[in-house]
View 1 (cartoon, helix red, strand yellow):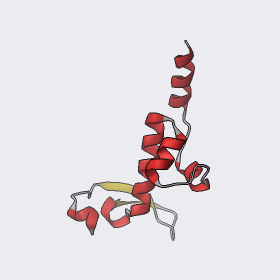
View 2 (cartoon, helix red, strand yellow):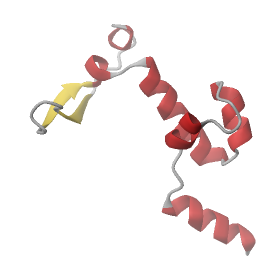
View 3 (tube, rainbow, N blue to C red):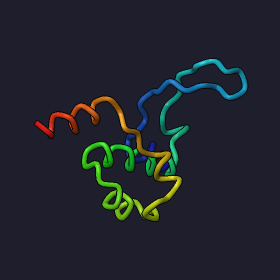
Length: 86
């Protein structure tokens, strides 16, 4: 309900857990505070690449297993690290 009140209602593609088929649903019907936290952690980590800072902001312990699942080291991050050496 809070997402709808905030105007966050765009359609997203999701997998139906019963049929396995993809379907289009408004994000406010599937969003949760946990989803928002995961998204926040992933986005802020990608930008700043500092686990201790992001852990502090998100309330995770320094070596949290959950934090490790939320962040992703992608090709773009690897390229940025290598170009920083030059």
